[in-house]
Length: 266
Image (cartoon, rainbow, N blue to C red; front, side):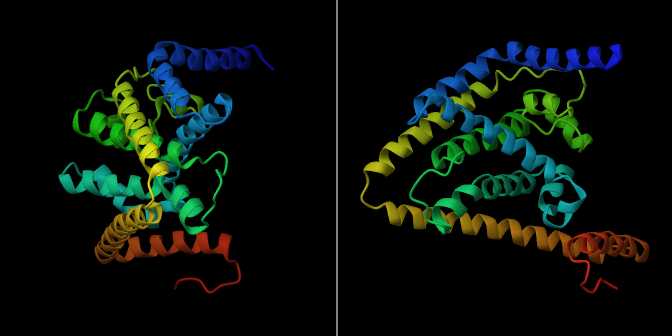
């Protein structure tokens, strides 16, 4: 390994360490939340929190990859517009996406045990935290310009900031976001989830609550699917012949990789 690579390697880990030091307060509050929600070993609970942080980053990043463009038109609308429709559809997208592991594991498969690392209450807590941070802190309050840069350049600042640093999608490359604004969101998300867990585990109408939440989730997901389909149809109708040809070429490339023996789009 050359001197340059050693320097780059050391600088990379120094950047990560500096991010943790600068944002020790938000990390501390998140860790206290894990202590409050812990019902197994603290290490296991904390790892679930970190998995959900990673899940938020990976989900957002995949949403901007070419392979996801057919199912991501609603999110692109959020990037292209700042009206209330944009904010509302984005909230629906995030509810649908962030809670999907919970719905699949504990409603569809009906697991009666915690499938590590997807604790249903931690999924709920981190979903409330992420959705409120994205749409209130960044979207409405505009606490800083970190996320607005992502709207200008889809390849940077997906968030959370810590993950951008780790996966080298941070802009500016040596920047560190002060995430103290996360703290109220973490506190409120913890209180809501803790109170709901306390109520739900003592109530005798668990199935009715599950069914009601599932109906709400299904309606929200239906809104996302309808909006995405509608926008895709409008886009296709507005395409020029050359754009249609490029669109079909992209789809055919995907089909060749997934289903090499099937008939392609002509």
